[in-house]
Amino acid sequence: MLSPKSALLAATFVAVLAACQGGSGGGSNDNGGSTTPTPTPTETATKVTGTVAAGTAIANATVVLKAWDANGNSVTAKGVLTDTLGNYTINLTTAYKPPYLVEVTGIVAGQTRSYHSLAFDELNASRTSANINVTPLTEVIYANVVGGLPQLAFASPVLANYDRNTATTAEFNLRNSLYNFLVATGITRPDNIDLIRTGFSANHTGMDKALDLLSVVPSIDGSKFALFNKADFSNKVVLDLSTRSYSGSLPATAPSDLSSIGSFADRLTALFANGVPSDSQLDQVVSSSYMNDGTNAAALKAELSNSSYARATYSLESVVGVTGNQYQVVIRIRDVSGNTIFQTTTIALAADGWRFVGNGSPTEIDLATFFANRFDSAGNPLASGATSSGLILRVLDNSNLGVDHVVVKGKGIPAAGVTLYRSQAQGCAVFTLVPSLCETRYDFAEPSAVQDDFGYQYEFLLYHSPTDTSPTSYKASLPVKPLLATDNVAPKMILPATIANSDGTQVNNPTLTTWRGYTTGDLPVYWALNSGSVTDNLLTFTIGLEIKTCQLGIVNIAQTVANANYQDTAGNREIIFTTDKNKSSDTNPNNPTLAQNFLFNNGQGLSNVLARELKLTTLDSYGRVYFTTYSDNPSATSCH
Image 1 (cartoon, rainbow, N blue to C red):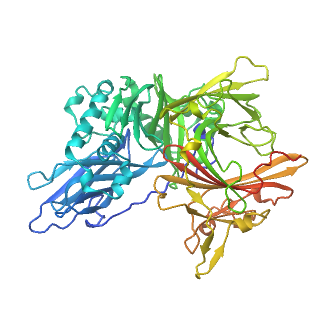
Image 2 (image 1 turned 90 degrees about the vertical axis):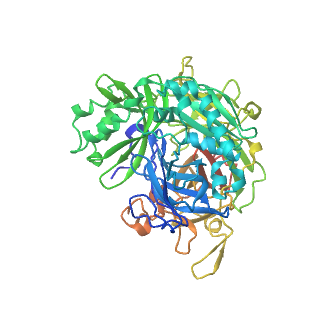
Image 3 (image 1 turned 45 degrees about the vertical axis):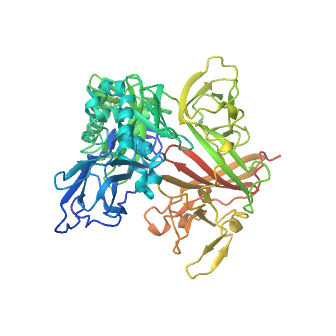
């Protein structure tokens, strides 16, 4: 089994569970990915086909089509799955009337993503098939047509909101805005294609090469969409939904060697096909100067020599960024037991083929934006600092790094920067804003400087001594405006005031009552979504437990973070932290009844507790982090 703590490619690991969802209408879904409604004598069998890709094909994604009946009512065709090349087929009849609306939900680089598309040409006896591609570009077109976020519009479609002329104009204007960029990717006549209807293959050439290089993100409030070229962020195309107009252009930059990038995953699969490769064989794919987030060539080869990787299969999931001839990519690894992990690294094309070269960073540097709603131990908003927002500045520390402190600069931060220190707290493995603690959340000192909707870059300066005058510089970017206090984001996850047992009885404050005095044993944590406007789709939920104790006058931090995708027998959302190794999934991975039990503090009870915090965390598909925290001593910073 592949270890989730593996250092391979120094990446974040995401477990994936794919499922097919269905809808009403249509026929069975046992015929290899198509539905077959039974036509009446007056109806003609038709079909919709298309390619689903964001550069790499989105395989095993759920495709749902909505259309209209003769009375103008919305009807849904049963969901199908895309094949390994990202292609799909939905069999219909002429009873389904346009506009045809398509939603695809699948895993892209370890994250659940949803894309949409639409078409207006009616299927009939003369036109029995239609091609509807689903890509980030069709997502932008769909947003332009409905004047809002596609996911919300698709969930409850209103026929009057779908206008053919608006759709035609939206596609034409977007294609014109991207014209020079599309030519650079190898599409010689962009005026001869249609971004929705023209077929293509997910093979990293032509249209698919353009999708590899495109990054599409909505603004925080969903009123705009921005399109970036990953190979050159100097300009962007912005769709303003209030006016349904595009502005700007993309740099006509498209690396020529991108077309062969998919061969690297094939090369890795072949290399591991008969077992673990030899050291000399690994030299063929690992650069001798490899360095990626603190992992060097020797460490990478040692990891790849682990028997867990024998006969594993590899696939390229996404191109994250391009710097010169180097590509930051996400690679999916699937072992012989079916375990899947996604890992990020940097590769480059050498004379003898693609190789791991790494990003050159001596440690992990992560940047994200957050909004926090903070409560006390009784579940009431904190009297001071009930909300906060800003940046998560995470730089991994270790004894061999040789870095004294880190200074971060960028919008919202004073010109001199903000300093991250080596933590004095036991159990803290990152540089911290407060030396005695383990704090990586930075509240903006200058929020007025954070006004642009898109494009934020921050510089991390690593100083190797207190007097170092030549720090090493690394850059990290946020595609969208960081979250601000004025955004007033409501909590997405909460601790419910009551839960229902399987026998129907009610339990009040089921989590807080136990948590307030927790030092050892089991701590069940029950949680819920805050409102009907928050759904599981496209969101990742985790729960963290952190307890600070005082040991010999020094703050000691015990913490565990776990995925929150479990329920108890009564259907309540629940996970359990425990110090009992016999009850933990960490020490009993093959016992499914313990899957929701997570070992805390390596099974050791606690004493001299200084403060407790429960952190309910929601991550959206664009890397924005939403915290709901419960603290019994939020102002505790030291043992003195």
